[in-house]
Length: 447
Image 1 (cartoon, rainbow, N blue to C red):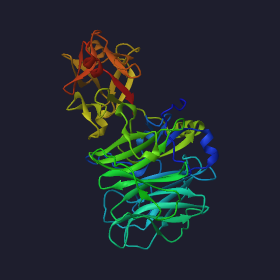
Image 2 (tube, rainbow, N blue to C red):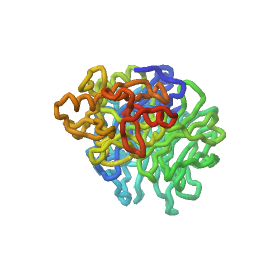
Image 3 (tube, rainbow, N blue to C red):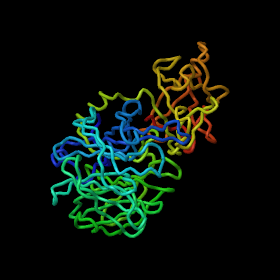
Image 4 (spheres, helix red, strand yellow):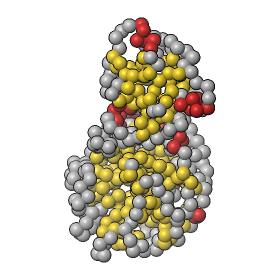
């Protein structure tokens, strides 16, 4: 596992056990999955890990690591927190799919020593109101000596507010209280506790992410202050701080278009203003929705990767169109905006080159008898006919990225003056010389 880089992310202050922060150098993300036509919908807990907090590697082949069996038998909006004793607790919305009219007074809860095993699964009742308990998150309130659980619900006036219950063990809770009610609909609260003596609460208002702050954690004490940020309709704020610098990051999950993560950054959380992060710098796990990010140690990272397994496939992202990924459609190679279905069209196995093992060939995951090859300079997905001509057409030499050496480019084996590039979103092999052509021929190999 690589060491954390200066732009890495960390969970907010005050959430985890203090001794863990000195050792933590990596990150775990929890999420559920959805895709545009529902092919990738899965309402269990998914995990991904990252050594820099920006590029994420899904675990367990992007399948769930644990699935609820009670309540709705599905979850949304998971939250992972390291407790004061160093172990983890996972909480989540009791909802499978998008039945927004389902009112559950419960949340799912698991205990975990290491995020490899999950014990003590239970439903935890938060209130008796005829409304829901969406997007639960937890924090340590040192003044009370208890954990707070905040969640989105509807008050007696009929609009969404953020509620809070307090607990010592995530098994019994105090009576619910209104934590934040600015007088209009707010959902998806996310806290950063004890930042230079100030506590920050980010939430969704209308279609944007907005912040409030307070010098205490007392219910009713937060006041809105920040400039809203959004990219389309944006929800599910995740506020995290760099482990090695003063930079803060604000992640958001869009629902117009559905399922795209965006990130903003700020060097001054108190200012309440944010700058968009270049999409080249981060890649979300495939089909991920409403994430939670917590810090972990290097040993925990390695143990999670070993236990759940690394992906047996890759995705390729365009350098100059970083919202687009390489896929096949109608057996034609192209780049398309994420997300799309079938999402499996964008998963590839980079295997030793069919004509030269020093190169690579791109084997389709969902059509494993087919490989990406050039034909009349255009790339298409064809079945391997076993001929030497096919093997040569389907073999490419991976080089340092022509537009960015930290990325990758792919030179044709049998037409070595030509590289894979996109043109009008279609993939082909061409000679490349101009800055635009070099960018067209540059890709990241990730997940």
